Length: 180
Image (cartoon, rainbow, N blue to C red; front, side, top):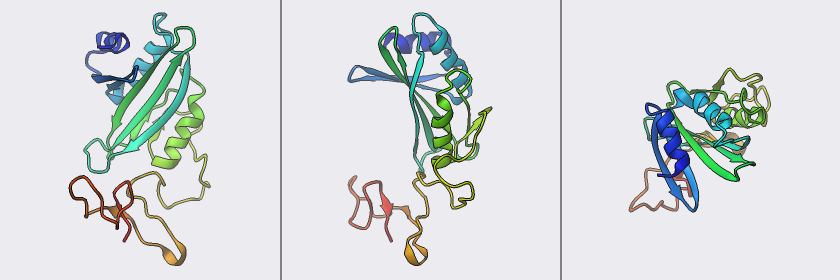
């Protein structure tokens, strides 16, 4: 196991879900309930010293119980190492705690995830739309089951029923969304 993942597992054994190392980078999956404590540890521990948040994004897995996956990417300037932290979020309670108290740079990144995916960040200092207009009320554009309005009213997109042998039919886009 990668040393960073091992430190997280030792410090937070109940929150550690797993880790993967690929191409010289480590990804650690944790339970969302401990995201702030784990991030505070990554930031404050002198051996880790993750002083820079480089990205926050999310992925939608509409057919899974824990539908959304939050992905945080951190960099240590002093130690010259990186880590990716992942936490799954269920659709029924689509919230996770904000890390803006640790990295102020997370502010706009969390707002973007909220705006595009609908994930609510608890204790965020200014959680409101950042890309879409405040009066936009048609959902969250990066969700896989987003209703896209075209000229003339549009057609709702749904998950592709035509997937066979891990390939999508010509009636589906590359993400498996049925085009009607």
